[in-house]
Image (cartoon, rainbow, N blue to C red; front, side, top):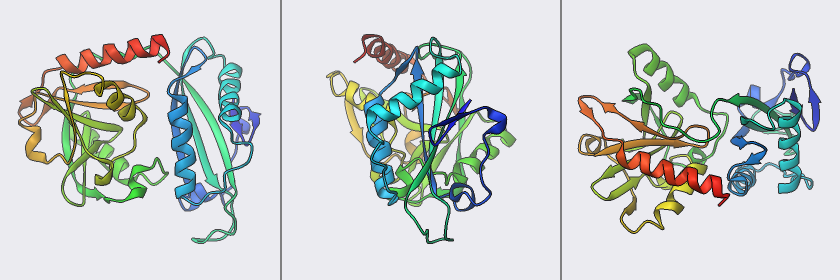
Length: 282
């Protein structure tokens, strides 16, 4: 079942108007959430990112869009789809109501919530090759809009096609200054000695929820130095480890870039700490 504006509908009855602004103009944003056995992971961070994103896009936030309301909507659809005791991926899409062309006639919104089942309760690292390449056909703007999970993801889509056609597992995206900002499906972290580096939001990378969680964890680990600064393509060859983060898959190490192969020791350690925090509910 799918939740459309608070109404639970069977999948084959959940339809969208051809005039939907998310479809016709990409006037929409989304939030991807992981739920483990009825617990929404990092819910506070998801909620505040969603509200901030709606404000940036000048969407009118409904009075009922409290954390409690949206949490109940998510748990209700999880329960109705028989996933309350499992792990699930939840996607919340917010679009502006139809009307107008480029300039909308209203800033009021509509929403949908859909779910799919995940295989594992906690994050795991698959023992398989994860080879990446640079995607250089198109670049991401160093702009506040690039940090949002909007429905405008053509660079990611074309990068995915490039990876598929050339036998790579993922691609790294660059901004208009030719700095690396993220992977197709998550934030990028680079490890060299005891320094863990990730691009700053000012470079145009996604304001990822797991990125935020990991930075909080690293702030409490004095053995590592955290560096939020630009990453050039040349640094990839000198790194000890690279890994990608998102809330659905957790921490996914990169194993190969060009002729360079990477270790995964620190990545695995950080994943263990992350899973422990989830188990303890912190």
